[in-house]
Image (tube, rainbow, N blue to C red; front, side, top):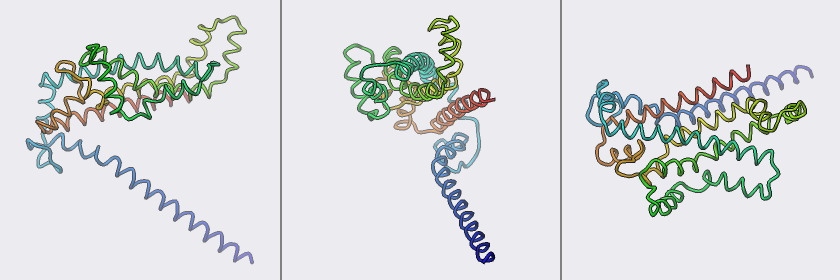
Length: 274
């Protein structure tokens, strides 16, 4: 009897082991399928041919030099960075305040407000782009910094609301009550007790806001102008009319910036947990 039970346990262990291997292999294949297009772009940016090819027939840094030496590419990049920087500030402020009001406040119609705040994640960007263009064009907000700031803040606030709301849900309100009982005002209690505890959530939302603003393409395509042109709009134009490895260079730089920012999030979370 004991031998039968032992054989049964061994067989069950083998089946679980095989199942884990199969699940791990399937997960690896899915991740490779998702990451492979991004990885292929990197060697393309070093190709020696005057067109995009994979695998590259030779390796050169010529296209990186052409990118950094092209005033149009640099102007579009700096414009996108400026928009992303100020969008991050505005979205972080608005999103953090909204999250505090939604989680800690007693607002009438809280579910409706939350739905409206998160709607840019649900509504297709093409619909938002058309609506913004029709609204901005009469006000002459297309192709300028202020118009992009308003549009990108609208699109990125949901990321901050989600990350800060999650951090507030994990925050122990007793700590804030203790600060208030010790004589601290609401503002001082928030900045000295609440904010340091939810800082990882705020930083995460800010990074996602920056990346989302810098990489946003659909709305930028509609509200860009001749002078106010983002790097994604410039990328679309070159794909249509001047498809060279410089396009792969821009894509590689965008991927590198995103990975560095995601790494910064991970470092901040690790330091906070330690």
